[in-house]
Image 1 (spheres, one colour):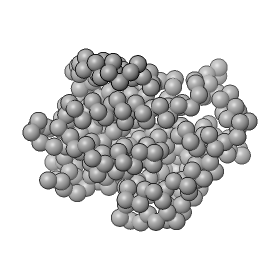
Image 2: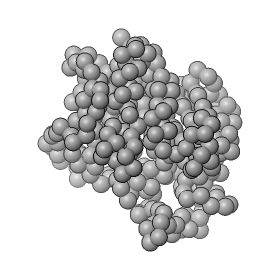
Image 3: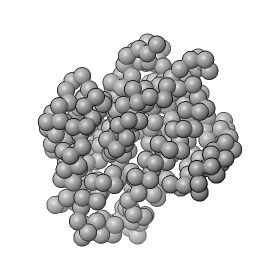
Image 4: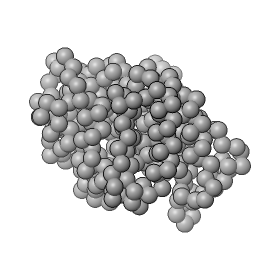
Length: 307
């Protein structure tokens, strides 16, 4: 598919009012957004109350879009409550005006789309093969295909963002463009900010899944992430990076790895002006937990006015 054909396809994309219901603002769904890099997937665009076409907005790209707005439509009946929290912060004039672009995950390709590709390639062939054979559950592989997160990022950068920039009154520069996710979505958010620092001004990574795969002993993945970060974090000196984590359920595995990452952040020159790591004792690995503290990363990323 060449660029000309892709632009024609994108021009035919029609945002439809979604079955999703929000308490604040409005959300539209771009059904099965076409891509030459990843499988087609729904994209949800949330607009705040009082949205105006003649006003400019910052943009937050979020992963696992189907979990962000409406608990009635999610598999576990939980949601991030993005519309409620964002609107409250906007109403209180604590953040600059922004919209949210929620990108649905690819279902069985989620792990392949979200696992940062360059750190994965730091693993040796035997380690990679072992992970490709790992099961999420009985007779279901954790990775449905080879790690392809570089293509997932190309989808966002070269296909989705140009569409948003052309169809919504948004700032297009890095200082008004951020990315956020939890768990594997936290990993791919950090990876996006590192691989495309000219596009994203920073990332918010909640309950970042530093172990990368299912919990097991002698896991080489955290060391690969550390190696990648040591090589690449110094170039993000003017980016904003937010981390947080709890200590229950899957989050119980994260504290030692987050501590190591925090050390790397300090060595790379990050400080309180552009980096924050928060620990939430007693919180678990769920949308309810992320909802309860969503105001923290939103304030960190958008907590200054823009004219």
